[in-house]
Length: 447
Image 1 (cartoon, rainbow, N blue to C red):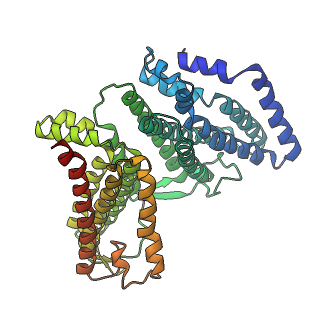
Image 2: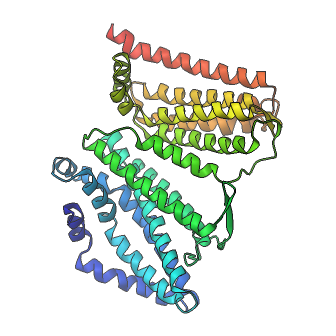
Image 3: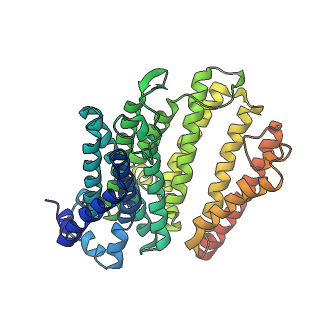
């Protein structure tokens, strides 16, 4: 048996806890539940235990070890990265799963009278996978928070848990599309309807199940790869670009929900799907920008490896946000080729695409500018505040006036020359500040 999991079994599943959990849950179910309400109540308790409580335990799994000064011993042990990963993902949440499985069992029995066994089993497995995905995301982000700071922080744990809760809540909202998975408080009651994916009619239950299982697999792989980096294993840089490409392909299969375009398109369908993929890749670029390490030493290493033409090592140390940015740029070029002459809602597509890339580059330069400061502890927070000002507060002050909106957004109804000039000016200004800070901190200091 996995030693890390066995240690957590003895630590989490004490006799007092094993007795207390069913007594408390039984009392709550008898106090609030009725024969018609007991299934929804048990399902709601499952969501609360796994999504609210379980994500907290997962996000704090490694941070607690750092605080107790036992993490370094575990890193130096003979445990493999995979043993530590699933031993902590499952082990840290064992007690919450003990209560969650009790709730699922009560729900299953309560629904057996009016539902078939197969849909109930399908729905139960969906709920388990959705909760596991939320907890794994929290664990992965919690581990990265410890790696970046080297110690436990309350903000890091709260952010990791918060993102895990959002992932879990989203997955449980779509539980209503899977027969047997509705849990009342969270289910959207969409029913097993048909969805269109790349023009093919697919059952909503099948799409939801495939999606949650696939992304659970990706989060487990991400946690394992991050644990390998923590244990100083050398890894090949294929996982993140593969995840970005998979997510883009998955999301591009759904039909777009935008205003009907007009103008010249080589292929309207391909243009629409490329637009969805490009937006997805851009979103993952921003996520990786705030998630990944931006240590100045890493940049200097990349420059040395590039100069020495050691491409394999260069690829290994390339940050995830830079890989995502490259994929976004390739998709943007393809989008220009297939639909650059079109318009969407009065916005010239080719100008908006180029301006969008420039705005992304500006935001990245803004974040790097603060990371290269002498005290970069709050670089991400300051960047988020400034981006909030640029994208929300300042446009709101102008009343989101179409005449000046091109200054703040690439997809604004303005003449292409205005949109491009505004984006290029802001990108150039931030690039100048970034280059000056780099020279001041590293080039001039070394001289």
